[in-house]
Amino acid sequence: MMTMSHSATIGVAAQAAPRAKARNLSLDRARTFLTLVVLLHHAVIPYTHFGHTDPASFAGFDVIVLATDSFFMAMFFFLSGLFTWPGIARKAPQVFLRDRLLRLGLPFAIAALTVIPLAYYAIALRQEPELTFTSFWWKTVTAGPWPSGPIWFVWVLLAFDLTASLLYRVSAHLVDPINRVSLRGFDQPAAFWLVLAAISVLVYVPALVYFGANKWFEFGPFSVQASRILLYFSYFFIGASVGSANFDRGILSADGRLPESRWLWVIVTLIPYCLMWCMIYIKREILGNPNPLPHWYHVFYGTFLVLFSASILLAILAFFLHSKAPGPNLLDRMQADAYGIFLLHYPIALWIQYALFDYSLPAIVKATVGFVLTVILSWGLTAALRKIPGASHVL
Image 1 (tube, rainbow, N blue to C red):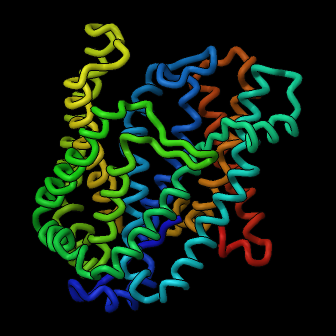
Image 2 (cartoon, one colour):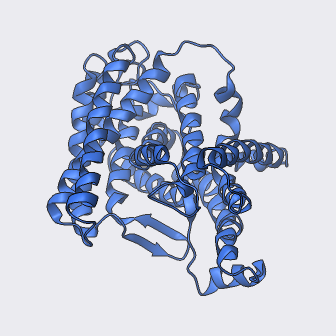
């Protein structure tokens, strides 16, 4: 899904191309770690207040889901953007388009027609036990609804890549201002955090006030959360800016201040996270879960969310940048298969939850079984598929 690392003279993105081929172990591990976070999110969400679809529940899972939902997709877009600018610089436009369509467009199309209907059939079967998969699939792709599940990320990333390619043709220097902030972040991570947080507030809070939290733009299998699309693009573009030049002397340098201050960023992260829970308490216990929520509520909650997202991004990266373990560890072994695991895990997770639904087991047991089996089965399936000739270019 994402590979990262670059170095070059600022504003001359083409010079970053030779370094862009090198692996950055810390960021590869962070990317794979996030893939596991996605699997954890989908393993526990049926047992939460947020997505209670199973008789069993555990309040601790709400703690996990609030955190994951508030940051992990934005962080995926940030990591995805890191290699984009040098990638565009060293490829002809038609070659870049071909590669992105192969790596993103083709997997999205295949998954939308197979993986996603198979996943949601598990939910439909719970409501209509006599429903056949053939009739469910036909209704999904013709009449709808045609949900995209987690693969919405793939088509949105493709759209962002194509947008970045157009912006690069306008000017290769568009990323220079934020890249300079990244360079300053080598010694002053808080300066980078302030810029990231400020941009996030500007693009997210007004959209949240206008659209609310539950509005999605949908057209067939193409869907994206309305209030977050600009937030995601901001993270992607900021990632592209960070990776455009002087990567090893910016905010994500292993020799900079960010890894040294990792525990400080943990503390910074906890403050807006706790404030989000305060807002949830106000919504449920004081406001009585009104629909729609007042605008002032969205302003406060949205601000705390983006502060949390910006903080935990730096906290997680700080720990991976600090780690000097040479490996290979579990994340290293999983790295090549991480994209396939992301694409294939959803039906596995939902069918395991379907199988466990009627068992009177504690939510912790169900979620643990679901998470472990989803990791093992989706990893094994991905590894097997990647042995098919040519499949490794897509998965």
